[in-house]
Image 1 (cartoon, rainbow, N blue to C red):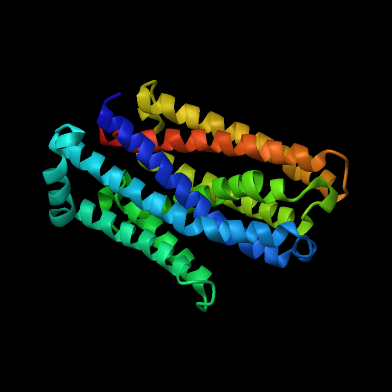
Image 2: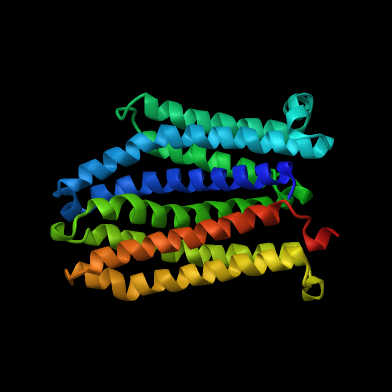
Length: 302
């Protein structure tokens, strides 16, 4: 793997993980406010404050990752080493649709950070942030293979929806497993309404991911005759395996873990927290596979 390809994969993964965290942080803050039981616990304001504080830092990390992605793309298009891609990067931003779309995405990320620096009193701030993140996700879809038939083609909209749903699922699992539930001590009881909303959101996202993923598979392969044993198909199989494992872990939590925690069964909170962390790692691996797929030419175009 070349240095350019490594930078593309690493920055693309970081970009998607940051987007997932920000989308889920906005949702989780709302879910915790809805959960009256959680709201009465001392850890709930602490969790909401931590999510609030994370937003500008994660937005800036995503902005840096976006710049790195564009730099790597410029180096790849100009067929020059990363250290010599300055001129190509400047031309990419100023003279290409790809670069301009990437720049608009960067402005969306910077605006999200600015919104959170301005404080909490701005009316509708969270909704504005969600719209900006949706705009950034569209810039990612518009700079993917899905845009081969037009910037506003069906393929781009489906890819946009697919990316947002994946980020909502990955982010909701990560935020719950690594931040919210570790703060909710065993003795405080499970945040039942929060877990219910998390489970419902994950189920909804998974259904949408399956539908949009099926469309994307049809768009990429065209016909089953194109499905072979090449690098694209192997990477896709790894991605699907990781997603299947994550679904199995999530299914256990939905039908066994969350109900156990809701009734206060001993050790349930610790168990579901650990499983959510495992699920988030599996989904991060699936995201990496997706980033690698995005860098490969789809079989239908070969």
